[in-house]
Figure 1 (spheres, rainbow, N blue to C red):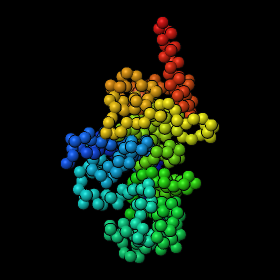
Figure 2: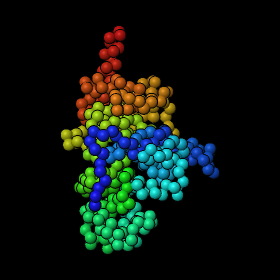
Figure 3: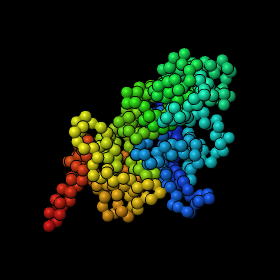
Figure 4: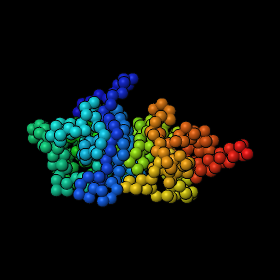
Length: 368
Ligand code: SF4
């Protein structure tokens, strides 16, 4: 197979997918509209995925990241906002007109067992999208299936087996092969390794990276595990309760997070040296509000150790903390000095709180 060329080094980045002000409110229309508050699953999300890169969308369960991914592919309809694919606005394109573009935008699902039809053999599973889209003769389809089996590390004899005969890792390889059958450019990977054993996760992540390099793929990679994201992503966007709260190049975000929620996620990455310490710190013990009952002001303020009065009343905008690094926090410009002073990598949220307390006490003494 001849892979498409990746973006040459030094050339200007080309947007593949752009979403602008994307909104999805469930329960705001229909029979029961008005009976209860709508669920604001996605609430004004904007980002761009550049050709050839991996943008990771991370956050806890309920943050809206999977809904955002489905909206971006028009698998569900947005309540508001715009979606552009290679510069073409596809927000209100009919499903019929979207059909040719669907070939170029594919998805790898979290649970390969649920997403594969157990009544079909692997060959039938992989041939199905080719038949639906009218691709080639029977011989060409057969050759394409054989090619993809090899690309994802499966053997020819696997083609005649049923997916329930495979391990979780092998099933995800079939899921990845199916997503690649129609030569997509953009692949949305929705938590592709979170249902797999830890020992298998690295194999599948390495496979995805290898396929990206060989085929020039662009990934929107949905995950809650920042350890996986660190291996996969070029840039990282962090979501909290339907909003983007931080977006930055991977190295910058891991080294210099500006939003306390990002710091909390980083702090939750297991570290061998922290095995003896209690993991759940005071602020993280507060459960997040639901998207149907959002707090006023900054949505993170009930859990934030750095919240001030302004945070309870005024929603922070997502704007630059530094060039290329956006954060939605009233205190984003204050964080670096005491991060440097008191919060080396892996410092807990409690340590941040203590540092803040010391800072305030010193300021009060100075004023006194
Ligand atoms: Fe915390 Fe306030 Fe920043 Fe929100 S705006 S993350 S509450 S400091």
